[in-house]
Amino acid sequence: MIFLDIDGTLLDHEGGEALGGIAFFDAYRHELKGSSAEFLQQWYMLSEKYFEKFLAKQLSFQEQRRMRIKELFGHQLSDEQADARFNAYLYFYKENWSAFDDVIPCLKELKRNGFRLGIISNGDLEQQREKLEKIGVLDYVECIFTSSEIGVAKPNAAIFQKACESAKVSTEECYYVGDRLDTDAIGSTRAGMKGIWLNRHKEASPNQAAEEATSGAVKHGQSGGTSGAVTNGQPGGTSGDEFGGASVPKSIPVIRSLKELLPIVSENQ
Image (tube, rainbow, N blue to C red; front, side):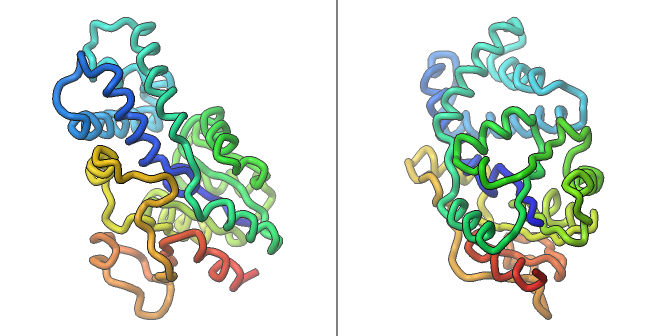
């Protein structure tokens, strides 16, 4: 069975967040200082800061949204005012949800080859399901597991193990594909699965995404991936510098696109 991450793996979250953020900035330009690029850098920082608090169970999903807005506009805002402004951002963000170009062809091919597909994701179950439906992926997966439902977040081994248990498969039989080395590939490997790192950007960062979006360079489904598998699971592996300075365990395959996934998972089918 193959489990997949959502944001950055199936859904172009960075592109959607950047384009949605720019539209939100334009709508509230009269209250915000600086350029759109500066705003996006601040928005990414707030998103990361408060989402981590949600994952650590320090804030509810709704509270972490409110706190982003209150830190941005001022804590004098009421909860209702903060909710209304976040909903404005959410509208722009959802309008820019899209799957990467390699997603649907890959899922179709995996299904044709008899693989069961599932999702393991940090976040709110309702929103993650909505994302999958919007980008046309929901019908390809048989189960969805999120941190809000299971009660622990990646890279905690329990979220991977409980997902496999619910799907009635052993961890050793399962692959996990995600765009974050530590959270996804290493986390799932430590839980007993076969982790695969989908490294679409190489050295892409939120700052780079902000600059690309501001210049109009962010395009749905095109995030700088290259063709040709780069598999770190082969003898000798690769240097950390080759993957943006990251230290990649030699047992973890590294791919640039989901087009490269089928040959890897087929080896042990």
